[in-house]
Length: 286
Image (cartoon, rainbow, N blue to C red; front, side, top):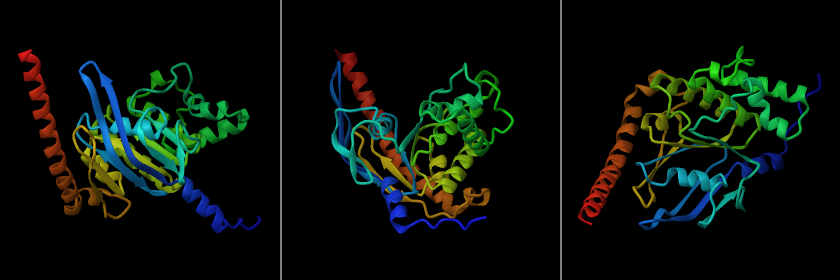
């Protein structure tokens, strides 16, 4: 067997640059029947190469708006998004996305679902099926290759969607509340699986979530957003050892992080409730 080829410093540096995401002074407004609404206001942050960053905030703070801007699905905004220092507009080959909504193709089995992006890219059938099986194994679905989505649980279907995104080998993975419809036990187990994959592939990962425990369990850093207009309230470093075992999750340090983020969110959610109540009273007075 030949000796493994050494990876040059230039190649490593290039991969790190592509894995770096910059969000600079993003402002996004929407025109509604009640007037113009500023959803996101002057938001700036970065996601480092190989980092797992979560964005958390109250409902209506612009989390999904940011997700769609970074992923290239939403335009007409101020500011810029960069990948590896290059300003991007629209979708980017380095970015893969996992959504909250059901996204498997019901007429395709698990193997065909996961292989779909490889089929689109023109990879030969044998090669794409081999690669798809690898990622099916990574998400713990060995033996289910010939099953169709209707034969799977919600958690298993979401694992298929994650495997399909990973099969395209994105250097940057964006996930918008991918576990929201799952029960707490399945969330924790699937979160563990995603984290193991992210660590092994050294992927730069951005997770949108409203679940504080999930964010602390998975993240290197957590960005807390304000109520609308969404701004960066605080960025919290999660200095907990990996892997995040049950002992870590039940530790005092873990609980401290959950409590401090909850204090921030409670303040913003209360502000949101007061704002909504004021709007309701105003509409009632008209």
